[in-house]
Image 1 (tube, rainbow, N blue to C red):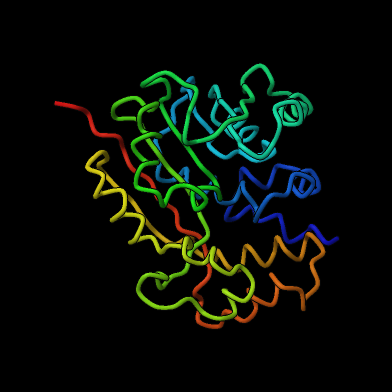
Image 2: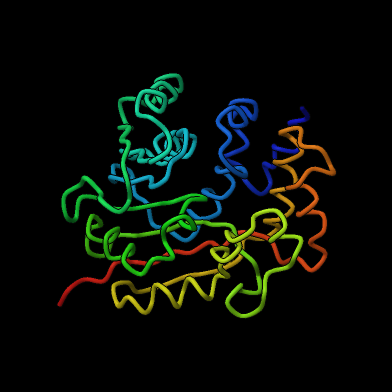
Length: 249
């Protein structure tokens, strides 16, 4: 396992301070801290803020948020049990700032206007395409609060042109959720609930995914690596999308 490629202090200076082996041990998708650090360029997150980490996986992003931004975090995930998540938080010394909650985004167990910021790293594609979800998520966000997410994407949206076969051969129907940034911007704008939408492709997103896969020890002819290496048109990457919840008049 070669982890040297997972240190990019010029592009991701904060992420470079974290042990790559620790991150790989919490693997649930391509380098989550690189995605989060890039997203944070578009968000105003102030010390002391209350942050919901939506679809936090095994907690790497929640650890990062608490340590680097001096915020209080609710680490929320459907697939990871609370005791496993809590153990990861305690091991990295942030259990006093991060609370682990297991639950479903369709029924968030939080009060209205509870959070200053909501982030979601490499998870929104599983639920966010449903037009009912954004209003549900925004219910727990304060007016003028920030929402930001990253998600796997195709530069040419799958609703505009059929996804490449080298993608559908690997992920099948899930390619329908790999939306381009403009699709997400339209999807959020049509809700009428957010302003100041920013939607962009992450620079070198595919290359970052290749670095992560190689560090995991994936074979060059394995399914994911073959998909990434076949992407000569630079279609595969990550959408990075953020917005601000509207303030009611």
